[in-house]
Length: 114
Image (cartoon, rainbow, N blue to C red; front, side, top):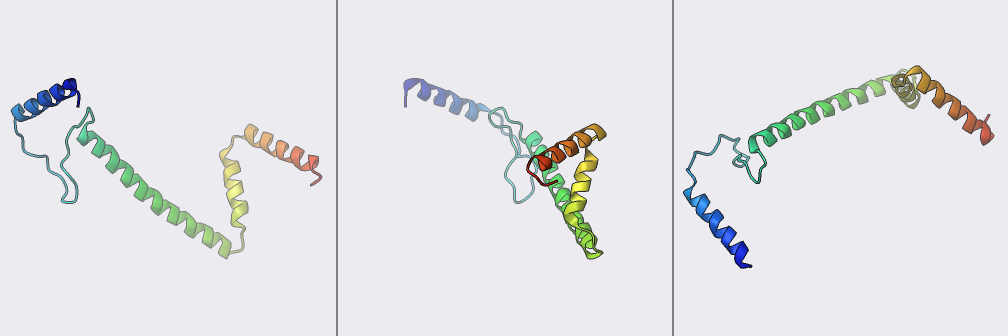
């Protein structure tokens, strides 16, 4: 270890020893203490992580709902793949959809599919 690194370590150690002792923040039993480390705000980061986790749970539930709807759709005789294509086309604005359909027709004609 270089002398400069040793000095920085000693200064940091002294600062930590002189820092006022505060009670740790309340956390859930299976999680560690929340604190600011290296310029990263622990509470704020935890807040982001928890929000993302909640949204991931909601997304999983929605995904399961969609699977059920597609299964129902197939059960009454519709082709799920075609319905998915219709849904993706409906997301496009009219001009973009027209361009995509024209390009598809052009490519199909070029390879002899039409």
